[in-house]
Length: 171
Ligand code: SF4
Image 1 (tube, helix red, strand yellow):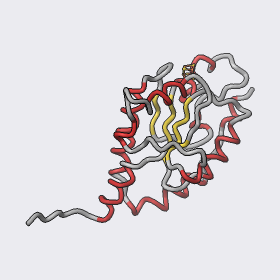
Image 2 (cartoon, protein in one colour; image 1 turned 90 degrees about the vertical axis):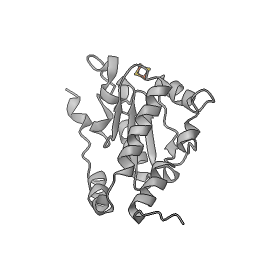
Image 3 (cartoon, protein in one colour; image 1 turned 30 degrees about the vertical axis):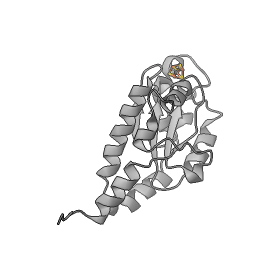
Image 4 (tube, protein in one colour; image 1 turned 30 degrees about the horizontal axis):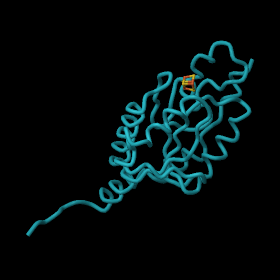
């Protein structure tokens, strides 16, 4: 007879980590690499994350792939706020993480989406390859597996009250 010893927390976290459903949110070139990750060569379905949703209410992972402008910033925040808890964010590409090549001079590009929403994993490069996105997803899965239920309320409050500071960059 086999006896399996574990906790409810571990089982639920295991289920969550292996069924992260991403929101379809590609704004420029990086999103082509994100789409490629779902194709047969890379097959994100192996990690349970092939179910891209078009509604934020059905998604718990926001892979933000591409540049975000000041005009789009409040929309990104609204979409994030509508996502189901517990929710996670991967910032994919240099533009998303820091404004990338637009950072020094552009009047319109936000210099990092962490000025709008909390980010769990930063994935720089221009553009990141599908392998890199899969690596970011594995890192996020490890983070989800290690989560404590006791911290849930604290984290939800942190998400709700996360300050939007992107306007401070505009001179
Ligand atoms: S990081 Fe590069 S590939 Fe990605 S959106 Fe910016 S310019 Fe395009």
